[in-house]
Image (tube, one colour):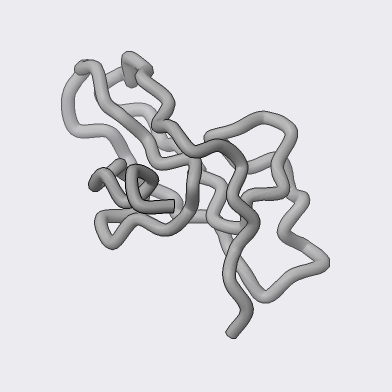
Length: 79
């Protein structure tokens, strides 16, 4: 498996809405970071689809190296 493209070396701080489904970009190629725009179709990567349980501010990974997909775990600090 190849490594995903690093979109940015910082997380995206966003307020996500309860009950809404999101698709996080796992390949790093999306022009709508941190969300999927279908750019992965030429890669082996697939988006991480998740339903937000409650409305809250979250930090979504944009370096694509996190172990807590789709959330930032600080891995970007070592890149």
